[in-house]
Image (tube, rainbow, N blue to C red):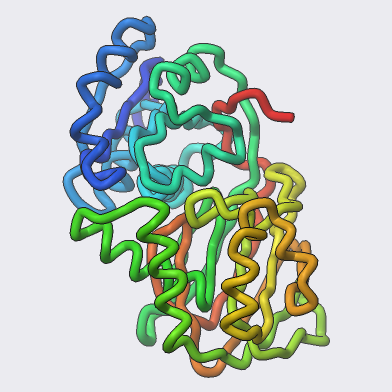
Length: 319
């Protein structure tokens, strides 16, 4: 006896995070819903109610036959939808289509693909239907003594980047967000941050890179932290992880480089190195923290790998 095949439903599921953008998701949904309804896009909309709810809803609707998802939220909500698609093993991930209406505080994935922050213009991108098949990253990490895994669509940050993200996420929970909050946390965290001894192995090479590290970014796309170009050379469909390593650096040097984070020119600093790899292993002492697509997760050791051109997304006018 065989299972009945799932009947595919050619309709978009819109997952709305009402807490995104420190409440913009809820405040602006009426306007977004009106634009969507006028666009002739067939959709059903559902609010997320708690952390990981978008992941659970994605899994639920995949089982019902849906293959198209619009994320109305931020990078964290997008990450949950991606993980809902990738943790299931029955449907090839290339059969899904993901689009975004950005209402988050960072919206860094959208910056890579020229998706406007204007809701009506973002919906026109969905109507236009320009498909890009991008790479997805996968990282294994630890929470205490338990090893866990997470997929990511944009950027994973470790060390200082993860500390700043954790503080910013706590501020978001208190209703405070935006660029100024992120910059405040970036500067205030310098007062107590301690460097870690890090060992990095790319592509299974026998000779590791050993150094004292300030921050490590691993990504598919270029931006995180609300428009900082941490991985300026990233190409989202080249089958390679882009890696930026910032070695031990003085506090005043960090402050002087902040403006250069926004155009990517900070990588010219002598304490910064960039790499590309299909796999990456990171060990550190003491352990360093991890954030993925802006969400705080766990700590080292880490193992990264790339899943080439494994998800279809709708994009704007890419150069």
